[in-house]
Length: 217
Image 1 (cartoon, rainbow, N blue to C red):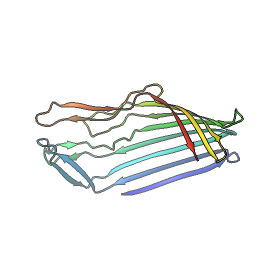
Image 2: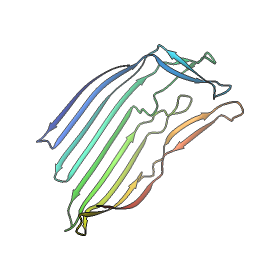
Image 3: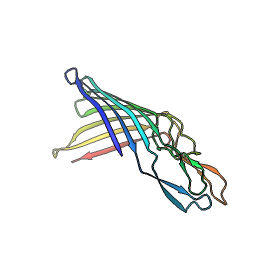
């Protein structure tokens, strides 16, 4: 494996902003590829191949603190990969392998705000959004997952002092996947003698929400 990376880290505006960016390229040589037997999937043969695979991309993130207690974050990742097809020792046919869970485009953004509206405790609010383009979870013919945008939120009243022993209470309300987005986290074909060739799909968690009460001492 050979890798190069070039990056920049910068603190700006009296350290109220931080920007990081990096570009990279990785080449994988002497790959090992597993081929299950079409007649018996539990029988697998590993093939050593000389064909190189490459993955390259750019990553960037930005953090800004425009006001006391307010923090803004954003990040973006671009990834491009190339894996040459390999020949199955069982069938003599080419098989396209993939780099799983690697979307071409992915991004996140978040807002955090912390302040003291009461004479006790600290109130903090958090909101984040996470985007992912489509990606493979298994080698073709399994299809790509759908792209998705997941939004999460959390509101916490913390640092509430209890008693004289320094104990603190924190109460939180939270929600995950607020828009109830649905996408495939894993999918593959059940394909073997005696089985109907069907696509087995596992979905992400639906919208969830809850409350938490913690005590530190």
